[in-house]
Length: 475
Image 1 (cartoon, one colour):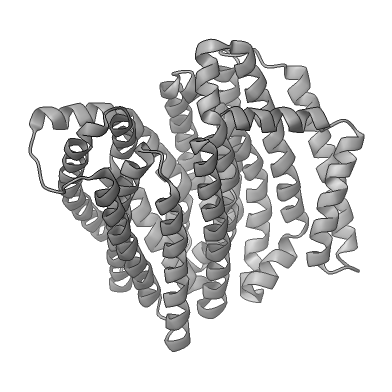
Image 2: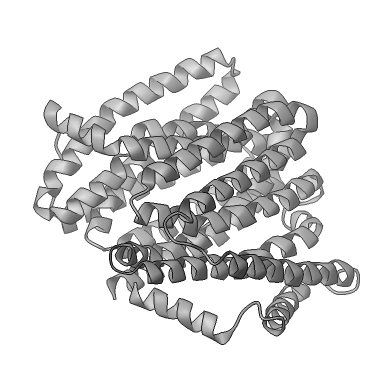
């Protein structure tokens, strides 16, 4: 019951947050243009990569250990916060060094400086929410997520009415992050009954570091994989290209909350089935993949067919060059969605090292392809690198996951083909009909057509839906 309730809280919070963030980015883009928003996203992406050296994989350890030993919450949170204080100093120094080595101008350095403040507050906020998560209390975090976004948008609108300063827009994020930090700290102290103070225990620090290492590596791979394209585009071809690409990339990235929320609900069931029923583990894994196919194909193919309308409607004519990157990144989104249940299966089966290795391989391929393709093909090259690396990660994951549970390959391939056929026909219809019908009206009509056609060709059945819902309820 608690898991279902918490999943509902977080799913609702993320939906509200993503909608507000999407509209906010569109508002900023229309007011400051592609070059300035390129600088905005570069500063945030650059510092986000380094934030993993502050987090250092400690947050998952904090959740896991304080969930098992609630009476030790005070010791763990204080040790983690003390460690992170010194890691913060080291990370800020590293950012300063690299900013100078890369030859950032004064304006870019100032943006990175403010974005670093956002990074610091957000990192410590995660630790306070971790204490609440360890007690399966996500209500306050959900409120914090929504409140943070509302405050950011409210302050940002005021800034845009008064000035179009990128510096001030990132400062709005810093103020909202500080407020979220104070809010999360208040509830963590009140509910977890912790007293914040510095501690120095070398032996305990070593234990934390050893426990956090696998999470640190996974975090490094994930942060670099997610943000390196934005940073390299800025350095290799310029801020205006960063702005065009970031608009498409952020829109695509924001949709990943869907598989994340779904997997959060079924992950406990996967872990249980690994211990008690391999057959049920196989069933829930296959059904998860099929369910996410059902969601991602209409989203991806729909966005490809309506890419022109989406970009021009929300962002304006200045972002016309974002259309093709968005369409290409929507192809990558398919592989990203389908990897979520595969990665969760590996983690639930104690193959987290294999999952981390898969992410590492994908990161290396992504970085290498970005270096090769961006100077030659610009934004198309960055999007192509994302498609190739995400597809590779899925292939590697399926190969390793199939060693744990023997997938019904014929079933998955058949479903994959059925979804492609349904989505392709839907997309073709939308592409032709948009000349005569407003695209906003087309979206719900296309969704209805997709599901009805898929049902007719056997791509989805009532039994599939019932089994998936039952799996979620059991989790």
